Image 1 (cartoon, rainbow, N blue to C red):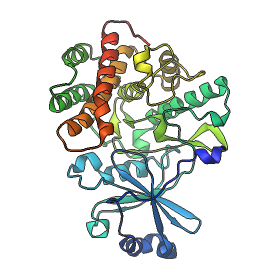
Image 2 (image 1 turned 120 degrees about the vertical axis):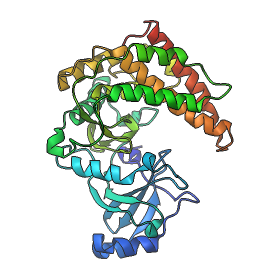
Image 3 (image 1 turned 135 degrees about the horizontal axis):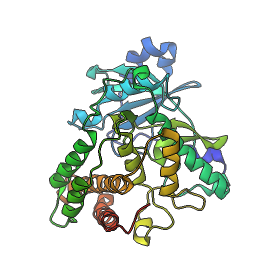
Image 4 (image 1 turned 30 degrees about the horizontal axis):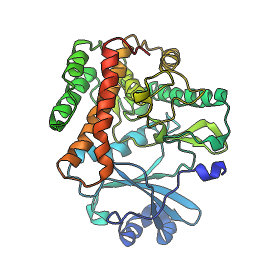
Length: 359
């Protein structure tokens, strides 16, 4: 296998998620010119929320993003929001896809959608692609580069980007803790874990605002990042901006570290990892925090809080998915496993609260 085989590629469109190609051709002709007449469509397989398609015409390629079919929660799948933030970032943050066109006319494909440029590259998922042949030192540099890009995002000048009025940064930490606590209460099932102690601890140990308002991604993880095929250490793209806003960058760091399982963690937590962050060479959370502080000038003095919040947030997301399965809203058996995932994350939060996991 070569690095070319590791490039994230689209495939056949899933049944029920087809797009009206003729309507798209007609709508996009003023945007793409004659290339619109020869468009073909495939679908990227990843993702549990917004849907992503590859549009091809000759040697030209674009990506189309749209909400999931049947969604009635506009705020959770706001295409105009994604398009606005990518439009604002394109001249100040070189890793976001470049937006090309936004469409609010539901007569085209039945929903809002937008078009952006296609970034071809490597995506790292649960298991590290050993085919890359990287040494532990190179892997360390690659993963440090991953966090450096997050720090670069948090350092974007809001005025220069025209995002000074985007989001509500004041009181962001409090709203996040309160909001995810409510979401937890709304997703509880009879067989669920008890998170009362975690919620109380998060409220009691909430730090002051960092004092910096930044663009935050809110789902920055390895499979939302693209690495260069000819230089796998280099980040060339950041995807999935649907939850991005302006808020406290330390909360964004905590959300990313909630995914970050390291080699010294308990086995029960390592077995639940969704990224190969415990591979030989990978930096520890303490090393990541130190690098982040040096790069951004921000102090992460309340690390246990941010890490615990990141884990609790993932607990809630998993419980929300399990809630749908428990109540028969979906028959997908994969969703049954999210109950065990919630238990695992809750156990890790308990260790943080007891002071047994610091970094």
